[in-house]
Amino acid sequence: MAEALKISKTADRKQIYEELIPQIESLVAGEKDIIANLANIAAAVKEALNFLWVGFYIKKDKHLVLGPFQGPVACTRIELDKGVCGYAYTNRKVMIVPDVDAFPGHIACSSLSRSEIVLPIFNSDGQVFGVLDVDSDKLNDFSEIDEFGLKQVVAIVEKLITP
Image (cartoon, rainbow, N blue to C red; front, side):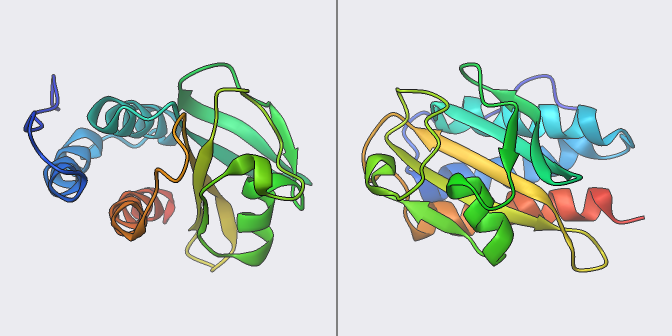
């Protein structure tokens, strides 16, 4: 298990993801507990990229329920059809929101959040297990580079939840 992340201080975001992904894979290798793994994944993404908030919401009954995260306190439950997380869950697609205040129905868990990216996580049956939610305190902070990099993070999680 890694004791500390090794990320180039002068790296651009694309390079940070390239350096981060294998370290996340190493971090979770051999650990079977999904909560422990999600906690370390959230911490690694937050540390490497310095986003405002990085965390997971897991589908339980008719809600997305807060899972492991790093950042300010967060909403505990989100209805499946509410906010950016609910939209990504319901529509089964990545959502990049450049300005959360302009997103109809945005749930303001933190007034510091300005932009957001949410990626659905699928189990082996093709059902949505939950979402990876990343918030920034900067407007328009997410791009296709983040989508590509975070999809690789989600792919690691999907391998962990496959029986």
